[in-house]
Amino acid sequence: MGINFEYLLNSLPYMGKGMLGIFVVTAVVVMVVNALNSLPDKKNKK
Amino acid sequence: MEMIKDVLMGLWESSGFAALFVDGAFLWQNLVMILVSFVLLYFAIAKKCEPLLLVPIAFGILLANLPGAGLMDDPTGLMDTSNIVEGAHWYDTGVLRLIYSGVKSSIFPCLIFLGIGCMTDFGPLLSNPVSLLLGAAAQLGIYVAFVIAIALGFTPQEAASIAIIGGADGPTAIYLTGKLAGHLLGPIAVAAYSYMALIPFIQPPIMKLLTTKKERQVEMKQLRKVSKVEKIVFPVVVLVICAFILPSVAPLLGMLMLGNLFKECGVVDRLSDTAQNALMNIVTILLGLTVGATTNGATFLKLETLKIVALGLMAFCFSTVGGLLLGKLLYVITGGKVNPLIGSAGVSAVPMAARVAQNEGRKYNPRNFLLMHAMGPNVAGVIGSAVAAGFLLSRFG
Image 1 (tube, helix red, strand yellow):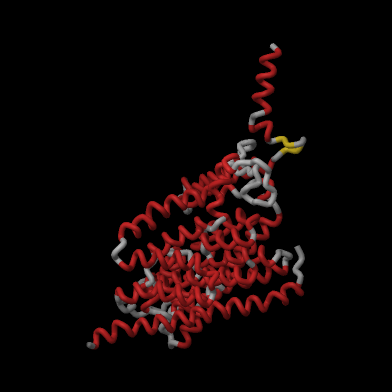
Image 2: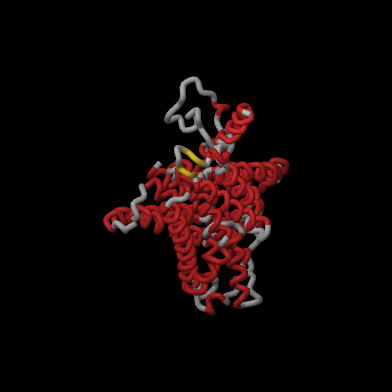
């Protein structure tokens, strides 16, 4: 039941990479959504 | 007299009572699990706690633990293919075990995602794209639980399966566990669905602890209207982007986005209707029943199960913390225009988590209407947890 701190430290990079990966994917999607947002605006201006 | 004795002996030997004694050992665990199923049925029927899921799950627990019934038996070895008995036929396998192949092969979780896609409105997310970031931050608990599970001695595959409970997404948890650690499917699925039902009790104390009264009172301005073109293009584009970056996310996200396209394109109403009603209901029955049936007493009642339940709760809490902390950051960056409470909705569990954010916001400002603002991070959380599952699968699959 004890905690193995060596294992804990070794697995921290996965945590960093995993969170970074989610934010990278999300950032790309946010950019795409922003691009999509501009679609109807252009139409309305015409 | 002798004949009567033989008949009675035969009746006893073929009964479930005799099956409770295997090689002199008493299978008390099965009786405990049967009692657990009664308790869950009580909560589902009398207290109406997630009855659509809990009734089939509880009944699955009951069926799988009936001694001698063999509904989950695999005497042929064909289901695991690790120890195939020569000349065996697939139809000799227990009926629930056969249905369980839908879980093992990921068919059921994917079909559930199809139905969820049909019921999801990405409008709030499209009108406020920043809410996607809240959905990403609320996956923090997955990785915190993963690290701690590793430290507790679980294998990376087991740790990843346990950690995904923090995504608050039942089908994703079942999908990933089925792929990485099938032997833990029972406790993980039961923990995931239990915590989803307990969101109104788990989240509010954390929300109160991490936010100030002033932050909780923030009123957010009305969201802009989203065009139909945006809603149609969004699922296709997001799927392509995510699947190109992380191909392992394609099965879940693909079905989610297909369902959403059914809903938004407006030309396949019959398919959309079937996917979100009839198909969803059928799969829910089969999934719930077989997930419940994985909780065989002998394998379920272990210290390991308690660890999984505790780690799942921890994952859930840290996911809520992640969403709230980014919400607070957005509150500061936007000069107080974002109510941090909506960050807690980033933990998927659509729409329960969004409703909790709405209710908590209303408690401190009766004019507050956060539901639609919270739906953005809420549906973003579904995408976020699918991406997290894809990442873990690509690393440890």
